[in-house]
Image 1 (tube, one colour):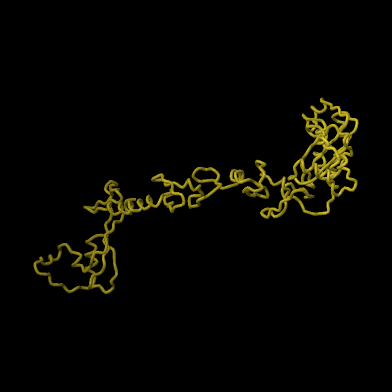
Image 2 (tube, rainbow, N blue to C red):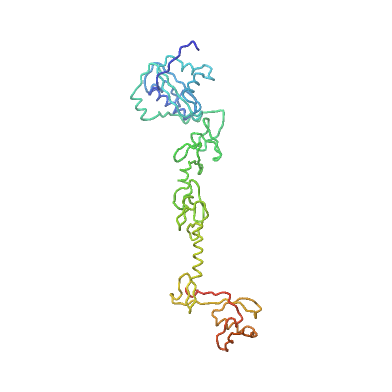
Length: 384
């Protein structure tokens, strides 16, 4: 080998019209998965090349393998030509008669990727045919479905969960979340077609989506801003929220992941929630008045309604009562009547310096009724 002269390359770039012939073959058998120089309709390499020009001699080399291989690796594989007893690929690549070459590269359903190289000598391209072909795309070859069914491999990998086609080879991924295998080239977002390998994704009814597309179409939405929730989420009685959308309705401060209240149908931070409780308690106490039959609770006066609340006294039996139970009277007079019906209590001597009890027919004090004050209540049921 050291004594041989270095050979130059075949041209300086891929010849356009020959490259179109190579592209037609990649599109054809790349889809069917067969390994052949013949097209699905039975045409040969010379037939494909003659679509786009005239030649004196032509030949074709095909390569199949991993998408990780670069152009240098592909050429070295053809020169080494391991596994081919005739070394036909080596002889083709190293044949000094070739003047130009057209190259195409693309997916192959059995081996992952493939490359087709169309060599020619005495080449004269047909510019008009090449322009029409570039405008129309690869030639549609009849018989592709029949050819696809005829492919037989020594391995059985099942079907792809995305395209539902049989996996015959090439790059394959085992996706536990989907429960099976998929072609690597099929593992893309259904909505935006972004490759999903190495990035977060979600499945919905056996369809796969990138995180943004899944959130937009099938994910939770924030109750606060109505936008999709992709990251952190807070869940409460009012719904689901972005963490940054959890804001106190009173002070407008961001609550984040701190504790908060949803009482009254609004989000309140701890400070504002506590203040509301204190204000409500003070309002219930300070709003109560009893003066000649008028009363108010929480600032609403009963006299403003033209009605009078009923006042009740909660009393407990005095020392003369054996039951020790409490009872409610609608007025002090009723308390006196209730006391008069009770068992007679021996009168007690008045302390020194105090006035004597009033004569019968006068007002009866609660003390003389043998009762002690437990609580004062107002009955607002009559106010409507």
